[in-house]
Length: 490
Ligand code: SF4
Image (cartoon, rainbow, N blue to C red; front, side, top):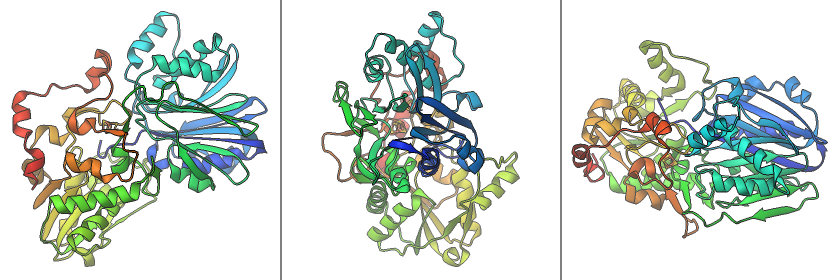
């Protein structure tokens, strides 16, 4: 785990006429590729018949123009890009999940992780269900299709399912006659919808995806809300689960997961990152000659740091945008070369300078150490690293791979120790207090999940079996050692 990996991206579109929606869905998913690069899939509804294709790989590897054309036209289409935070990486686990049930069929895409999937899966298995995949999504689809038997509609079945499932889920679903989406009552993961000029409605994980297909953002799906989009252009909203939990949008969406050009719950991700940079400059001042950002999320924050500190901002690291995840670095030398393949320093900007290097976070520290070496090798006189979030100390249960405290460098070391390990002259993390201030404006009654930084979980902690994957006990000695972590700064 060199960097934290995103969860998944979901997309859906409904049109009043048969159209080439697979191509549009491909475009919408392309804008969400940063949320998942392991697998992808598209399912299209052609007069009630579902055609779909899914496989491991990036969108442009999986969907050739012939493959997209083979899906044909349709009036509803959904798609998914996946990063496996529950379930292993194999073709079976790719989405959309397409299921036949007693009252029809259903295609389903999911972003997030359930915290009670272990208990639900066990119960279903004891009742005779045979699972084809290891994903939470299949657990949801089993419950949903069972509820459908005694419900008037799929939305009623979904409403009942939401009484049972707990955790993070932003869902986009397709039935023969409807596009349905919902967001868990905590609102962990983002989900929004918009409309195209021809009246088609589009649902997506992030607004950048709406922009890319030419749809205008209407609003976010509210935490706990079910939205049903019908062929006649009407929308039904079901809100029984709204306000049933404390709203807990993942704050790390603003720091790292989401794309800078997205708007989440009324707040610009770009502006949040610039603000984080400004606050970092206030909290962790340093005498330096140049501020550079680590692409991509560090760039916006570096601009903010420069604005506040009056230290000039320059582009000092260039990212190779065409590197895929298929390049596997099997040994240390290759891993070091890979950093150079991904990022190349601009020597003329760095040589002989005292550099402020702004990044989003440190996970294990290995990537940061390589990055610092890269900047030093380019001739930096001093390197001062600044990070736009507090140290990661706790695991995440909500659909990211912050999954083991053993892997988190800040769990084992103090900030001065980390500075020494990664080889910087000084190191400053954004404080927990400043973290909430980065997002503005936002509805004042809404809160955030910050659990990987403060250990305050909005849900119950997953059951023992899931917990074994994550949990380490935090000792009193450790707590004492780290209690002043944010105040110590450099
Ligand atoms: Fe986001 Fe951290 Fe909460 Fe996970 S624990 S949802 S990464 S803020």
